[in-house]
Image 1 (tube, rainbow, N blue to C red):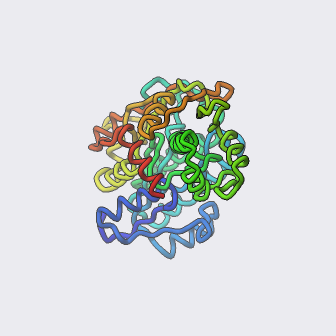
Image 2: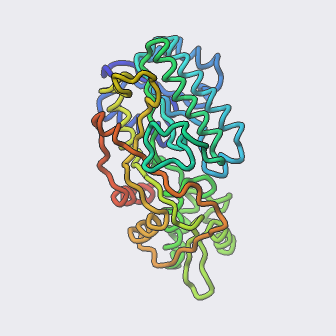
Image 3: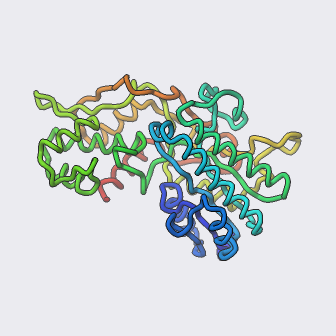
Length: 362
């Protein structure tokens, strides 16, 4: 990518998009175009066409998506498939029509079958059934991969698809009503530590900054204890504090620091092309997407214990086995990514420390 070229980052306010913006700026890219949802509805074909006609970006990072946890994915199934398909179709098609030099489409490792062999290689795509709870979202992302592949093969475009593993980092969501597992555990264990120390100043500051169901630090002590208990942070009659974790704690997950994910994406856009994503003698060009991850996983129970140790929480965990575990193992094979020239450097232990520092600084 030329330093002065115009770059459009779709979804710049999210965890992924904000990390991309920071990484691009750190490498000297300043001609970056962004739009908020209120300024540009990416599901609206006419608005997207007008945007591309006006701005004419040369490079596009497609990080915009409708995302959510297991409950949201399973509840709003129609919205997850419709909105994500529309966003992808509009941005990819207009990128083709307006001669975008290179596009990077960001998906998710939920594209792989529920009972996928481990670690998950790119060629395991479409070999078995998907996890039911997020099937609509996964199908939309699979369609995005095939959209990029098909435009490349038919029109000679240079659109690359990457599938990041579970991400965490700056601008993550710590709202306990909607957050993913790692930021949720950090916040709950942080609150648990404050509660066991009877540190109401810390509790009040936390709830003032990010109220839980409109319960802030100004609420009564009883209301605060009740909402904390609802979200799994409970002080027993003997004064001991327990933090609830959904599921058995046995499922294993892989986590990647979001700023490293951004670095991998920018590296691919700078150094690699679609033709690098498949073998020279490959008769049927498919599975051209690239896994982005660490290739290392950790059980949810061990993750919670690592966070507990770093935060200094002395209480106990309770595992709510009435809640679903989901897929027991999800680890990416990053051989392709490493072969293309990029490898992670921040492990989960260091990442938790960085994440907790970030949370406290907010």
